[in-house]
Image 1 (cartoon, rainbow, N blue to C red):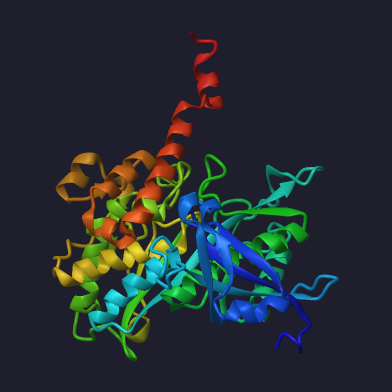
Image 2: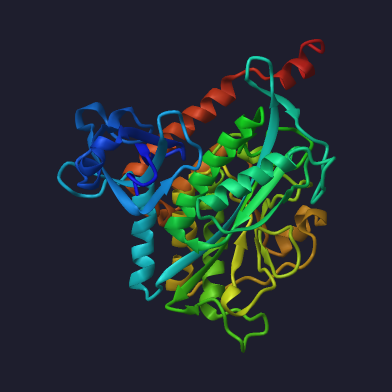
Length: 433
């Protein structure tokens, strides 16, 4: 394939702890070495990996992720392989996010589940660039939910993103303008958890690359603009046993099996604990506020969209739950790992499922929410990190290495935010005091 397609460079990709794509690009002459797992890199320079004195790490390419990028350079084509990270002694690196997800999937496997299927719905904003090529806060359209051109000026860019993804093997299910001005969503077909996380990382890369071609900046920041909806990444998920959906029971009133109900109970029980992973930035918590369609309450419903978890109407093989709080700034490998771990804990311990909430939670007052046993998600990154540290199940999903480095990075981020003086404070206090 390399010869046939004139591939000249191979990108060996992996993801750091904070969900940023990293890659080592090698000329095609190094392909044999890469395929023999002989390529090393310096782990000490990657966020959340290792200290300088233990820095040598090996890239083990996953051949199922082979993909040739559809844009050609003057020197030929570029292909990529997504890699797992291994230590020099041949053991998997315990801080590798892809490896962490595989570990939780192995636990699901041991419980008799052959696959976790995930359908992600990542949203993003398209912003104009200034004359220096830097992003501005000016959106590129005034479109609303499902609008068409001329209101949706992002349509051509979005269409090219979809065509590019399809040429790379993605099966795109829907592509539309989202609720907020300048906001877009492209949904692709569900796949097994590792492939879904790989696809999210590839998707982000393609979206940013094509947007730049149109003189735009694509951002997956959860809440770039105050007063309008933020960007989420709802995750539809189900467990399978062979060809059977373990979440479906035709005899149940809602069509949900006991497994599905326990899984859902586990998600609700650990939602506060996994929020720091699914919503990992200071900015994430500006999205999780009432009034903008983002969930901020830990509840579920088969009908309305204000709770954390919704049960879409499809049944049979399509029976699934939709967890609505994750945002596209998360590391998808870690986010899927902690949600799966939460669900498995619910199944293992047969956690009872609280009643569905079919009222609009946003219009309930605090006393009503308390009576219904509805808790809120954390209100800040600091609170979310504290909840993560207090949740033993979530801690064990990440492992000590990833947990320590993640928390350390997030507390630094919180402290930088806490000590910075913001425009709002100057507007509020400068002339008053």
